[in-house]
Amino acid sequence: MRHIISIKEFEKEDIDALLDRARAIDAGNYDRHALEDRILGVLFFEPSTRTRMSFEAAMARLGGKSIDMGGVETSSVVKGETLADTVRVVSGYADAIVLRHPKEGAARLATEFSSVPVINAGDGAGQHPSQTLIDLYTIRQAMPIDGTDVGLLGDLRYGRTAHSLAYALTNYDVTIHTLAPESLEMPPNVIEDLRERGVEVVEHTDIAEFAHNLDVMYVTRIQRERFPDMASYYAVASSYRVTPELLSGARERMIVLHPLPRVDEIDPRVDALPHARYFQQARNGIPIRMALLQEVMG
Amino acid sequence: MSEPPKSLQISPIRNGTVIDHIPAGEAFNVLRILGITRATKETLSIATNVASAKAGRKDIVKIENRELKKEEVDRIALIAPQATINIIRNYLVFDKKGVQIPKLLHGVVKCPNPGCISNTNEPIQSRFEVTKKGLHCLYCDWYLTEDIAGHII
Image (cartoon, rainbow over the protein chains, first blue to last red):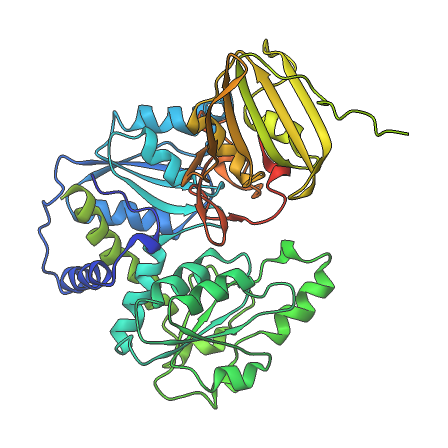
C-alpha cells in the first residue's frame, strides 16, 4: 500500500516518473474510467479551496467519486473524536483518503490507522507533497530543473511549501537563493540540511540583487498574524512586494510562482507579464493530483 | 587520630539491580525513565553526589528484587551514557553491562514541537529515532537537541 506523506520520501526517479505521467495526462492521454467505482474520502480539518477542489476534480476526471466529511464543525470531531478513529472509520468507506490537518505529523498518524492509502494534503507547518510536485512540474514546463537558480521569497520560517520545495530540489543540480524578512528567515537547521544534501544555498538581503539572478522566483505569503500590528506588517510586506519595476531587470526566462492564495506579495500588474506562472501552477494541480490518485489507487 | 573506617553509604542488596556511574543529580530522572515512581513496590536506595574517582561525583540507584532487562536500561543511556548495570544475585554481581542508546524510542520523550500530533489526545506514543543531530520525531520531523531530561515523559 502506497501512502503519499512527505516529498522527502520520493527518490528523483519517482518524482520524474510522476511528472512524466502528469504531462501525459495534461496532453489528454489518460483513461477516463481508470478510477470508476473508486471512492476518495476527503478529510479536511482546515479551510482550503484549491487543494480540496482540485483533488475532487482530479478524482472526477478519472471517473471516480469523492465523499467529503464537510467542515469540522459539522463532523464528529466536535464530539471529541480522535483523528485515529475518524481515519479508521472513513477507511472503511473509501478506497483512499486525502487528509489536511492543522497538526504536524497528522498524515503519518493516519497511515497507522488507515486500511487504505493516505495522501497528505498539508499537515500544519509540515509537509504538503502534492503542492511540491505541482511546483516542480510548473518549473519543468518552462525549463529543465537542472542548472537553475531558484529563489525562495517570503515567510521561509513557517512556510511549509518553501521547505518542501527546497528539499525536493536537492534531487536536482540547482542553486537555492533565499530572501526573507527578519525573524521569518529559513531556520538554520533546514539550511544546514539542504547543504548536507549537496545544494548550494545563498542567503540574500537585497531584493533587487535577489530578483535579478534567478530562473525561478517562488513567492510565499507573509502571514499578517505573525506581526504584532498592521503597521509593522505593511512595513515588511511592502518591502518584499514583487512588482513589474522589480522584475524589469530579471532574466528573460525567469518565472514567478506562488502556491496561492496571494495577498499583497505580488502586484496584480505582474499577472500580465510573461514571467507570471502562478495561475498556470494552480491549474497544474489537476494533472499532478490525477497522477497521484492513480499512483495510489490505480 | 585515625581516619574513620570507610563504610558503604547505602547497604548492599541481596537480589536486584544496581545502576552505577549515573551523572550526579540524574538519579531521579533515571528512575523516571525506568517508570519507577512513587507508586512503585520496589525497595529503592538512592545515593546522590557520591565521590567518584572517574567523574568526581556520581549517583547510584539500587533496586531490590527486580532485575532490569536490557531494553529497559538502554533507555537511560540518553542521560547516563556511562552508567553500568549490575545484576545482583545473593549479594554477588551475577552480570555487569554498560548501556547502549537504542535506535528508536517509543513513548520515552515528549516532542518539543507544540504543533506535533504526538502532543494531542491521539492514541499514540511519541516516536523518535536517535541520530547524530539529536532525537528526530518520526511524526513531525522536529529534532530534540537539548534538555532531553526535561522532555522525558
